[in-house]
Figure 1 (cartoon, helix red, strand yellow):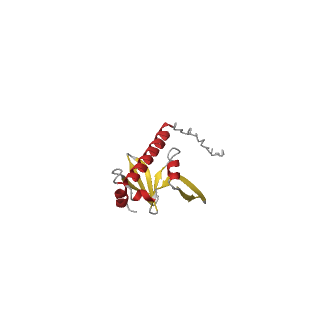
Figure 2 (cartoon, one colour):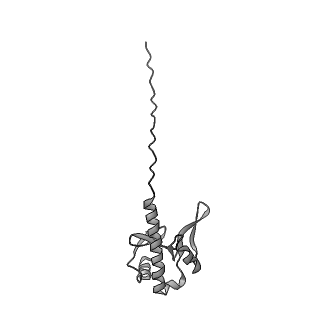
Figure 3 (cartoon, one colour):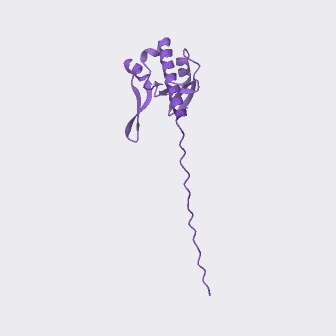
Length: 132
């Protein structure tokens, strides 16, 4: 799905911002990435609070292969009925934005650890002078 198609899909929810990423698109509302489009599939942001809603609706998480192993992301596939039901799309989008907001707040609250600078020791080579 191209950027215009994604804007049309989410139009009942919000005037979203679409950004290219990972060979697909990131879908933003309120400055938060709440959805992804990868290989013509749309995935909504998830966390422990909304994951049961997505599971109950029959959705599945976005999984890709990284370093030869499957990696599960915190984004779940948009349910097929939401493509045709604007009220369901809005409901799921609000849940996804709330999950994205909680993730952003948790990240901001986490203390940033800056590793200490390691002093490098320069080795100097002394030239030997010959005395004659």
